[in-house]
Each structure stands twice: as structure tokens, then as C-alpha cells.
Amino acid sequence: RACRTLDEAELSCTSPEMFGGDLPAWNRLSVAARRTSFGGDCYAYGLVALGQIDIVAESGTKVWDWTALVPIVEGAGGRLTDWDGEKLRPDGDGRVLAVGDPALLAQAVRLLAGPG
Image 1 (tube, rainbow, N blue to C red):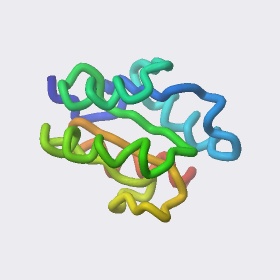
Image 2: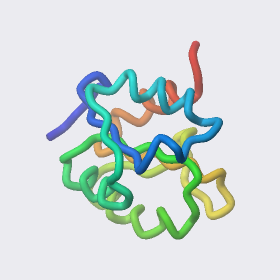
Image 3: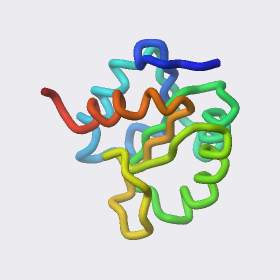
Image 4: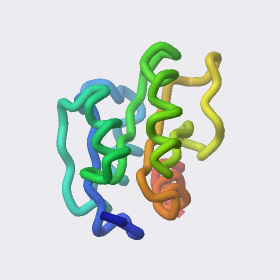
């Protein structure tokens, strides 16, 4: 299923406790989504690749948490980036954003960046 707007999107993350100071940004994204779920860990990224959910946004990840997921999500036509929409780097800040439909990326990045 293709989801082109956040108000239609299903959002997931492992746990809201992972966000720390990033929680306000996460909350902006969560409020904009149609539905939010928790607890998927790496399974949620597989669901993004399958088109069963639309977005995963997480914080505090390490390179070993996301490296193997890049070819899966992107091979299915999605995008896996940092919260700025940039390519993930091993020395990045640990904030990861996966979208099944690339049309959602700019919308999600805008909300994660802040109001305005």
C-alpha cells in the first residue's frame, strides 16, 4: 500500500523511552501520523519494506542496529536516513528515519526538525 501523506501513515518505534531529549520531535511526528505502534525493533523495518507500516523513527541507534536494514528498506523502494534526510553514517547521532514511500521523507524531516 502506498501512503503519500503523514495523516494516512502508520508510524512505529521500539519504545518512546529511547528518545530522551528527542521526545518533543518524536511527538510532533506521532501526532501527525494516523496511528503509532511500539515494540517492533528491527521487525518494524521489515514491515516498512513490505508496505505494512509507513514510517519508523528511532533515536539512540548504533551502526550495527541499522546497517543491515539499509539494503532491505531501500531495495523495496523506501528510504533509510538520519532525521535530516541525509545518508546514515557510522559516526552519526543515532537518529534513524525509515519511510516506505519516499514522498513521506520530506514531510517527516520537517516535523522532526521543529515547528515553523
